[in-house]
Image (tube, rainbow, N blue to C red):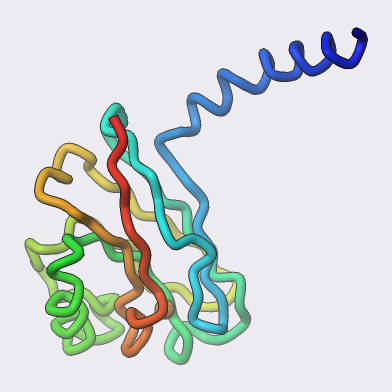
Length: 148
Ligand SMILES: [Cu+2]
C-alpha cells in the first residue's frame, strides 16, 4: 500500500517534466563511429525538435569528428557526397544545400553540440539523421519516425 502510494506520487512529479521534454532527445557518438540510437521519434506537436549531441570519445575533430545532419533518407548519399567535398571548414555540409533540413557543427571527442529541427519542414519523408564526416554515414545513421 505504501509502495503503491509512493509510486503514484513519484509519477505525478515526473510526468510534467517528461512531457515538457518530448521535443528534445540526447544522442551520443563515439570513437567506434557509432551513434547510440538507431531511431529518433519526433512529435508533430513540436514546433522545433532539438537533438543534443555528445561525442563521448577522445579522438580529435579532424580525425573522428561527428555531426548530425537531417535530410530525406533518399537524399542521404548525395548530401553526404557533396558534404564531404565541402570539407571540415563547412562542417561537411555543402553551403546552402536545400536538401539539408538542419545540421549541427562537427565536434571532436568530449565535445557537445546540438541541432534544432524545424518540424514543419518534415513534410516529404521518410527522413533520417546521419554523420557526414567522410566515410561515417555507412555506420552512423538512423531513421526519424514522425509521430502525431
Ligand atoms: Cu561521425
